[in-house]
Image 1 (cartoon, rainbow, N blue to C red):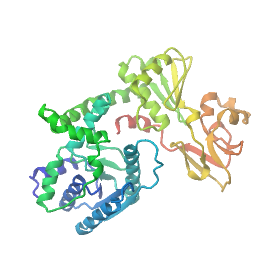
Image 2: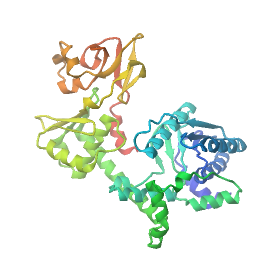
Image 3: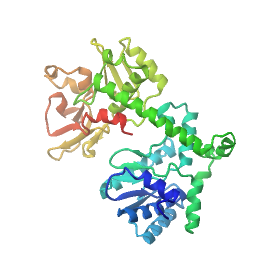
Length: 417
């Protein structure tokens, strides 16, 4: 295929901004990802860039391993290094598709980081973008949700979607011209999934003018609006938010309230996401109700956060202790945000919040000048009912506890998705 070919042009455009070096690609075996693999092989050859591939076996269907082997065989023919990543620890609770999606991202991230890959390509198409728009519209999403998937997002690795302007049918025609087969996932026809329902509704919507191209273009158009809101939120956060080593965010309401109300909500919800490590903002109606009470000086809890009001036109967003699950010391990461290390091997030691009982064991905590509530939500090392280390509360010991991510990342994350 020449550089003037529409598919090649789309790929070249979609990959123009990716970091230098080798490029990873997620390949399930379906038509979209197989087409992406073939197109990337051409691109890599032309650019002198190495391509690595990975397939996630979710172990949910008997055919899954055979499909992963199909991709492995194809990669051998194309001289592309390939690895099968296995997910076998689903606990059977919650939304299966959401759990599988999260697991896929974790496995691919780990794979990419081990190989030193700075970016990974994913085979989302124009059809996927249109379906995502409809799904989020049905759920009442605002600008952020309706703006859909971005061509480039994330960091370490960067996730690249170079085919958002290409239809699934165009990709299948491309594969047919190559006499290249692919596998069909029966779950793509299962009507119990909302995405499948949206996919099946597309022909009817197209008759009304709501083609996949128009829906995808609408989502793309909203991305500039989202970017503007993100920039305004970041500017507001820099003016009114202060972070500390305790993992909390203090928000100066006097500086925040001159901002548009939507920006105020965005700042507070981002602070809550930062404190909890959550992927999504709290429900808007719940956030709106809580914020109204906070402005009346009433402390609140929401989405795993305790939001404390003060006398100085300030609220402090901190972790709600009841939502912090204890871990064994050997795990190394507490509550998704705290890095834990020990000077020596310690038996029967776990990490959990200092809490009221832990605070009672510390004699001089008031000398720190730190709020009681903030100290209680800080991590501590425990042996049975005894605190053996609480570095953030002034009690040094054989365990070191610190935030994994620098507080400055708080501001950067507002505009990095």
